[in-house]
Each structure stands twice: as C-alpha cells, then as structure tokens.
Image (cartoon, rainbow, N blue to C red; front, side, top):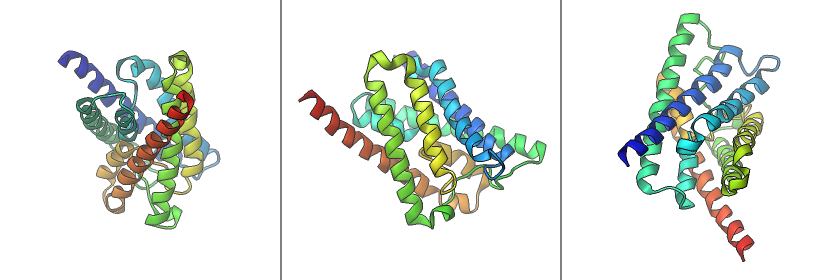
Length: 228
C-alpha cells in the first residue's frame, strides 16, 4: 500500500512540476502580450495536461491540481488520506517546477511577465472580480473533468478533452487573472516572485477550491438526475 501510494504521490509531484515549468515558462519566455503569446501560453498549459495524462494518468489519475483532487474527494473517488497526500505532492511539485523556471529565467535574463508568470487580480478589476473569474473558470474546468473521467469508455480521449478544456479557460482567463484554476500552480511561482503575488495568493487558493466544490455539487445533481 505504501509503495503504491508513493508512486501516486511522486506522479502528482512530477506532473505538477511539469505543468508549472512548461505553462508558466511559456508566459515567462514568450510573454502573453506578444503576437500569439496569449494562445501559446494557453496551449502550453493545455498540452502539459495532455502529455502528463498519458504518462501518469494510469498511476494517479493525473490530478496535478488541488482543486481537482478536492472535487474527486467530494465525489468519493479518492480517500481523505489520498487527497491530503495528493495536495502536498502537488504543492511541492509546483514549487520545484517554479524553482527550476526561476533559475533558468535568471540564467537567460528573460521574464516577460516580470513576476515568473504569477497570477494577479488587477486585470479583473480587483480582488472581487478576480475571485469571481477564478470560481467560474475552475467550475467549468473541473465539471468537464468529472464528466469525462466518469465514463471508462472515454479513457482514451479523456486527457485530450481535459487538456483542451484547460486551454479554453486560459484563453478567457489570461487577460483577467493570468488564469490559475489551480492553487498549486499559483503557490509555486508566487513563492519565488514574492511581493504582490504573495499578497494576492489567497485569492488563487480559495477561489479555485470554491469553484471545484461547486462543480462537485452540480455534477452530483446532474449524475443523480441521469440515474433517476
């Protein structure tokens, strides 16, 4: 059991590190404001999910996001112990990915975001707007995940569907908050960027968790209606 859990937790660590390094790395080295930069960053996050889903999906489910793990726990797909282990592994993985990106950014002398691809509230009009944006985007993203992973017959395409879903929420969210929908993704870069990113960090932890909880609740209602 310990060995199996260890593989799951390491998979979540590795997947989250890749997501943060590649997704935030696209923003850092390309810049979302450049021609095509917005779409490139969205695709980098989405393709990271696709790639990791086919590497670790059969080991841990490839949550690589505390909000997804929360929804899975609320939907009784994982136990509380696994949820806790997943979240710790995801946060540590995000810090590792952000640390590697921070080092590479300093060596190259490039950071088009000026803050390691961290999330911000200013584009959404402040804390209230940013909170609402993140709740809505996370709700949509997690609802898709719960739906597509509930049907084992869709297992071969689930990674692609989830990756595309993460891409389209980024397309909407990047101009507003930089798009979090993932507390671990926000925590890692904020630790290295410091300043305002750390001050606003609670928004990008709390809002995705609220959005995920709402998605789990709505999915339960939909699922029960279908069964009935």
